[in-house]
Image 1: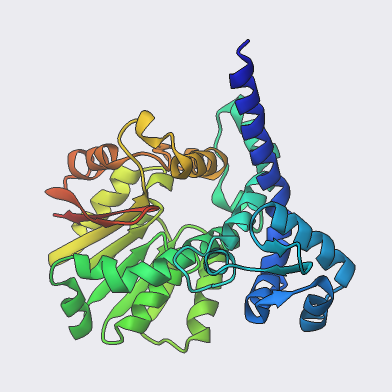
Image 2: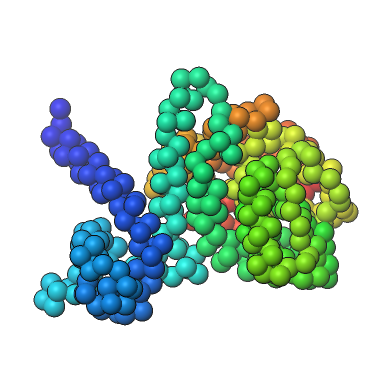
Length: 349
């Protein structure tokens, strides 16, 4: 046994355990607004933070120490005070930041709640339908993806499709397939009031939440329906597929239906998790997150549907091209932009 390698592995595991133990603490900080309060205060003690938030100072003291040990907040030993750096606030307190990652801890908690179901599926090879998984999963996933969509969808992704932003401004028909809680559908409907949008998802409870979301924004140019991608009907200038192609049981069938739904000059924008084309390409921090999420959620969801293709969250562009071009008959699939977390692809018929 190599002692240096052993010590390195133990160090890595301890780091991971610290992160795992931090999951409920970050959720508390997010849900009770503690990070935002600290950011607003600049410098605080447990007592002053308790006065600001109305929370118990003894719980806050222990929570602050844990956060400082995680480097999520800073501790000034000379003055016995705590504070957040701009970088820490950008990641944990600023809900509009593209790197607002606090909701990801909620997703991690939901994955853990799925463990008994997935453990059983390991033995049977069966899938687990989206609606049968952790009850907080769809909400957690929606919150996790929202910052990226909010900061990139209208500003960068749609304009990357040649002429599409102008088409949407004039008035277009858009289908958002696998819309979940309708965050993407709503963002587009707000940005392009002359266009009409329909969000489609197989999970009825998500569609209910999407309708509530739309009503809260008083939007009249969108509607939501329960259904599969392969059941899509109507003719569209644009079809969007956000972080769900790899979850489909029959992605080829879904994409074939999408191709047949195009108006002249129509396009499909596919957003998928950032991934390379080989396992070795994806053995990195982002790939680690996505492989873990895929094991706990994406693979079980796909296997519970129809043919159960189970592409996985790290399918990569080459395999997606096999599905879209070779399988579904699209003329082309090209990468039009990307982020550290996303592949953004355009499919043309």
